Length: 367
Image (cartoon, rainbow, N blue to C red; front, top):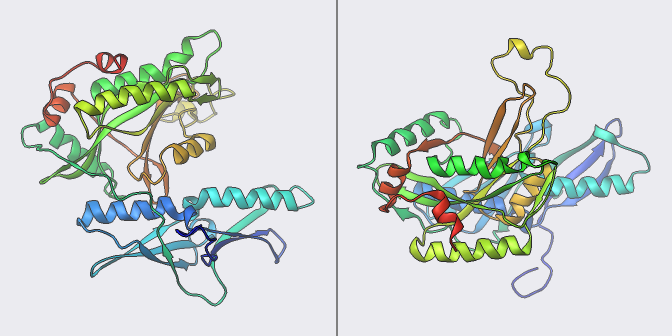
């Protein structure tokens, strides 16, 4: 819908679905402006944090052949004054559109198409580029300015993050040590029950800018998901869960306005099915693990943190050897991707924020 309430014309961008060994297109799923909201928000955030420029919310879209699984690559051209920059997104950045289209393909096809369904990103016939206005709920969030010159541990951690994420140029993420420990404790609490269930909590953090170090994220605390509906394979926040989180967050933000929800942590408190693979004993690490973001986890993150390119996720689980495992994700190029982070001592986090150190339990149990 447009600002006047009238339906907007088709954008001119779509996904075409076909079935292997059949040349005809079986379905065309239109991509709407709303479908691109997360991508546009990521671009606006990148232009703001990298160049310090306010991005024009009118974008130009193009499609390049090839890409992941030969599905094509979506190219979004953004401008900020005289600055012009291209951003590339693979098909996984359009995962909700793919899921929507696949559902309609399977409903219309008389037989089980299985994994033979293919899709590709296309523009309207005869078009090389289309323009699209970004439907963004708000501009990029305000960044809290900090000074890292007095905290050597923070500077070293930021350098380690940049070295590890050099290829993707992802924003550095720091975890306060007490918060990282508490996140695991909350997430693994469900494994001690007679019937293990998923447990976890909401991650709280600060988006920070240092004149000498740039923009980075500090995860300061975790709010446990109390009163949630939990099963072995799911964790659903109830109205009571959100009410408690809201009350605690309002009190905390009265003291520290830059504190905000920036992601979630939870535990897959079950073991992989079956024994370790034949190669397991010869490998340095076991790669069969329950520590991963499932499709439903990703849907939850998109719904709870829309247009939040700084969002992160932490999943705890077990590998096939019976060892504890964890996986950390950050938003990049249209989806949550595996990435790293660094842990800093509590006192250094407090020094960075100009606050007196307190324990996680003290902060999270009082509204």
